[in-house]
Image 1 (cartoon, rainbow, N blue to C red):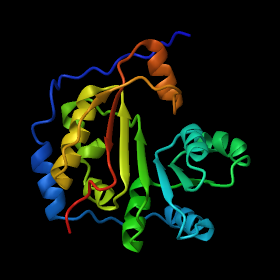
Image 2: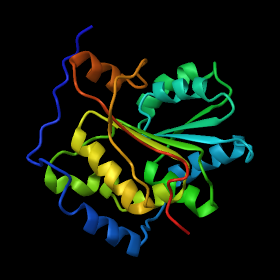
Image 3: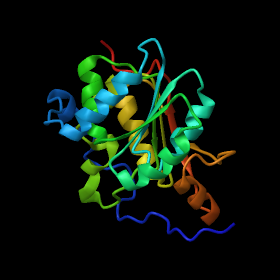
Length: 224
């Protein structure tokens, strides 16, 4: 199988010079924004099916939900929650989700879901951020999760957190951001998955892109 996706290109050659400053600002001024009503409705649907003793696995910006279903198969004891803004993409996953009793796919703003989880003191067992848009222009840095104002909230939720990307700089920024916020040493791993979790991972692998993973253990969280 051959892919045809282009590698990420950027004039940025290393971790963004403003990352540390942005993280410090985000920690000093916790992110606040009004939560969209459709996100509240989706979050209520999650609360309606979640047994609070059941581990939560969060698949952020899950697209078609392919990764969500695979994670559900790998974590049968957990409720695996896939979140995406696109009803069209989620419809593909929902057509297959009936085979799983431990999956819910939500159409919601991912930032809203993180804010609502933090508001309720929810603690996911694991969070996956799989092949997020790299926003490779240096001026777009705050669109990347590691430099986004929501990132301290994401890390503050706790649990194991894993990011996968085909842009090494994104992985390095993610690792640095996690280390800055938790005090834990977090590395970047070049890897080849035994089975792709997402359509992007499958396409990038077929094209011959290098793939990178950052995995922070559950104990790597901000000190109280």
